[in-house]
Image (tube, rainbow, N blue to C red; front, side, top):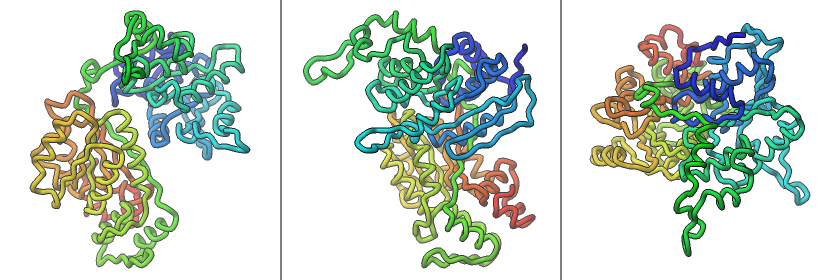
Length: 476
C-alpha cells in the first residue's frame, strides 16, 4: 500500500520518518522548530497503515498537549480518536484504509509521572491507567526531560515502557523519542533516553555505562564527567538509531512558524467577561470596570483576559500560568525569548516571572527608556537563556534581536505595522534558526479576534464595529 501524507514533508522530515519506520524504535534529534511532530505523526500513520499500530500514546509536557491536538488535525491523514485523562474527541470524517480510527492518548508528563503516597507506599495511578490502555506505540516529546538516569521521571518512564513490553510478545510498544536538546551536558544524557527507547543499545545500568564510556574527575570533581572514552563506539550506536538535523541543513533559517497556546478564564472571571461584553460595566471584587464606548470596551476586555486592571490589580493568573509553563520549557531547552505585552502591569508581572525561572531578564518600556540600548546589546550578547520583556511599541522598531528564535505575545498590539515590525526583530540575515511565534490566547475571547485581524492584515476597529458581539467573544 502507498502512504500519502496529509501535508507534504520537507526532505529532512522524510528521511527521519523512513529511518524511524525501518527501526521502529528511533530518536529524532532535530533543532527546535524543524518539525519533529510531523515526523512522529507520519511514523504513526504508516504503522497504522501497515496494521502494526492501533493505539498511540503521546507523552509530552502538559503545555504542549494543545499543540499536539492542533498538529494531529493538521498532519494526521486518517480517521482518529483522541483522549486525555479527562476528555475525549475525534475526527472520524477522514478517509483511510484502516478498518477503524487510530486511537491517541495525550498524557501530560507532569501528571503521569506524579507519585502519591498512600499508607507509606508510593503509587502512580496515571501510569496504571496507561498500562491498562496498552499502547502499541509511544511518542515521547521533549525526551531530554528524562535525561538524568537516577531521576524519578526517567526511571518511571523506563519502567513503564518495560512493563508494557513484558505484557506482550511482539517487542511493542515501539518508542519514538523527540527532542531538540538531546545532550545538553554530554553523552550521558542520551543514555537515559536510549534506555527508555531500546535498552539493548546502551544497557540499563548507569554505572555500567559510566565504566565503559565515562571518565570522572578526582577530589571535588569526582562526580563530574571530564571526558568520554570509547567515543567512536558510542557515537556509532547513537548515530545508527537517531536522525539529526540543523536549521542550516534543512534550509529553514529564519522561517516563521506559528502556534497558539490557549488559556481558560476561571469561571467567575468568565462570568464578568461575558457581562462586560454584553454591557459596558462589570464589578470584579471591589473593582468597578466601565467603558464609555465599544472601543474602550475592547480594551477593558483585553485587560480582563490579561489578568490585570489598569492600576495593576491582579484579577486571575490563567494566562500567567500558561506563560509560566511555556517559559519553563524554553528554559530547559536553553532558548532565549522575546516576550511582548500590551499593558504595563503585564510587563511587570512577566518580568518577575522570567526572573523567577532564572532567565537573565531585561525589561524595556517607558520605565527603562534610558537603558534600552544597553539592555538590547546585553540580550544580544548573552550566551545563556535570556528573556527581554517589552511593550510592543517600545521594542518593535530599529532593533535586532536575532539571539532569540522564540517570540511570545502575551498581549497583542492594535496595528498591523507594529505587529509586523515586532515579528521581524528576530529575523534577518543574522538569524540562523527557524523562528517560532507563540500567542497566548484565552478561549472564546477578544484575544483570538485581535490575532485573526492582525494575521489577516485587517483593520481591528473596522472588524469590531462590523460585528461587536462576534468580535468580543472571539468569533473571528
